Image 1 (cartoon, one colour):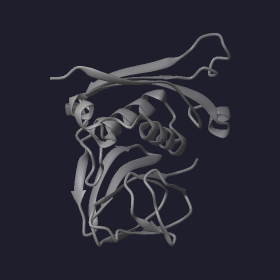
Image 2 (tube, rainbow, N blue to C red; image 1 turned 180 degrees about the horizontal axis):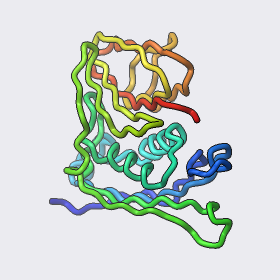
Image 3 (tube, rainbow, N blue to C red; image 1 turned 135 degrees about the vertical axis):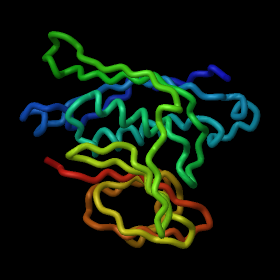
Length: 214
């Protein structure tokens, strides 16, 4: 098995995270360091972004999950991010499979400079099997669920449509919503129930976060 690494260091996300009342009201920075284990041989030959990790798109997905998840613990955030990245690509998602990762999350302002709290996890892809449900419009995969929030991947089959609520991020290009054709990485932030249509011949995957804004 290849032991190639792709790293993303120092990604700062300002988000709601923590258990204390002040933390539930005011965003604070979380800094992420990510190391992904992938096989880069195919990308080295065909030079296609879909054959490797698009670290810009990965950064956007991590930011979306951190901001919309409003997690109470770094541990929860770390598990959500790791499960999303390590799970097999969703139907229609054009990316290479990730074999393993090391992820560290830090809260630099949590202890007012006295110390730097962090959580680090290391996982392999076999750990990240998602609960999958086939539906009339496509496929729903559960990434993580707590009493406050649910994070899913929703993949819309060609010619199908579905109504979604919460916050959504497109992982592919071509879905229709709110009268627009959406590019990969488009984000709709809790604008009520949104109808998505897939007029293309490809599956259209989305990240979906629902739950209380508490």
